[in-house]
Amino acid sequence: MPTVDRPTCSIFYEDTGPRDAPAVVLLPSLLCDVELFAHLANNLADRYRVLHVEMRGHGRSSAPAKRYTQEDQADDVAALLDHAGVHGASLVGLSQGGFTAMRAAIYHASRVRSLVLLNTSAAPESTVNRARYMAMAASVMAVGVTDPVAEAVLPLMFSDSFLTANPAVVAHWKQKWLALDRRGAFLAVDAVANRGDLRALLSKIRAPTMVISGDADRALPAAKGEEIAQSIAGARYVLLDGAGHLSAIEQPEQSTSVIRAFLDGLELSS
Image (cartoon, rainbow, N blue to C red; front, side, top):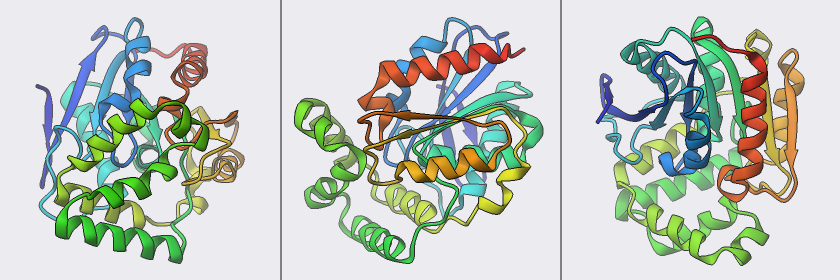
């Protein structure tokens, strides 16, 4: 299984598609593994080399030995590209994956061919939300992800309509969260809750960019995506009607369609 060894952890990734094709790196949300972008990964693999990452402390990636930042995860992306023998790639990131992708585009600009940012934000967490998330993280560190914690997460991740119409899918993801490594989950929430303000740096991004929001996203409302799109020269903005935070799960066909059209239109080289 392909992994990238980092100073305090090991990063797992799946590597599919032609090895000589343009590379696309998929960066999932907090609390999610490669299943988040499974539909997109399968769709892209006919034309692109897809490097599908499980972020620190998620899935088959190990939990780091110490606290880390979103900037550290941007360095993980550069290390992944080095390990895979890829000079530049398009980055697709949802929520935490978007936090990481934007930082990679700023601090490793020569490695980023294009950006797709879903359900994400360049702003820091509010003081109230930061305190709420850190209290939740402390509970997770102490006793793991409990049923009440998982229940509290559900309406942040999914729209009301999806929660009602897709109980089996919702239950599946809830079970995934209950099984998360407690230290890995704590450190991941910590890195998200305490991320810095990136808004003043967005104008440095020169890679072609598309920003996607869901109009039913409670965790990071559409206004956060609009702000990013307005701050990156030439960025495209797409609003998915009825989609909650995990838009790649709620609307896999629609999100895949707009992402594929965007990437195909760039005529990327390997």
